[in-house]
Image (cartoon, rainbow, N blue to C red; front, side):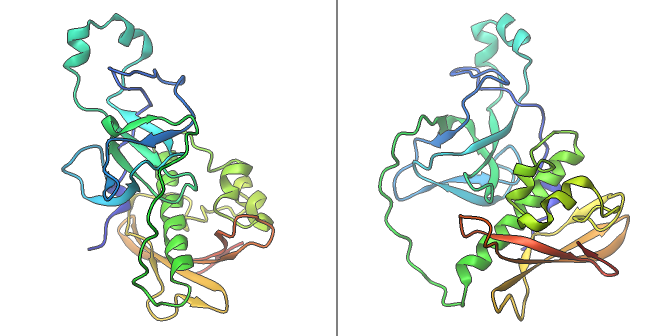
Length: 261
């Protein structure tokens, strides 16, 4: 079933857990999954609560996770004035987390997170490969990269600043040759939505149904409805020789009537 990205983020300004609290703006740079057995994983959901569907999973003891925001939000000064009884009465805390590569993201129960100070993770058994699709791993990573791009763009729409429009942030998604053009806004219309304004919803990014990879180029499709009109965007990705990590990055975004860049 396709998942609507627009329903994914209901983010508020970040705060920390009432019990082992790291108040907004003073928390660690990285987090680790705890309290999950070695043969299991931590569910990451579309929204902050168990009523939302699972869209990703973080491995047992996975470290280096980045915290985007958490709910509920409590200003630090207000938190300090609360009694212990008031703190215990707070609803469960959920945090929007991203993996180290900023590819997988989702809301997780904060009870399963602890600050990550670089302790080595327990060895994980290598996953069994069940797909024989040529380039399957690169294709899956490309789908995840485009998904993360839309998640950060959605946060920007809500007034939550991310690193997306910085050179470092954009460099995680785009090839070096077009990073500056993306963050400068030189395209005029939004290269992601294909329009100057957006009011609608986008479906889950998915690989091209007949030719997901051809001569090293990967194609990922995103279907959206903007102001009641259906539109399709195609992302072309390949490994950037100027980047050291071997992760596919976007080098072209194609809309119906124009391409970026």
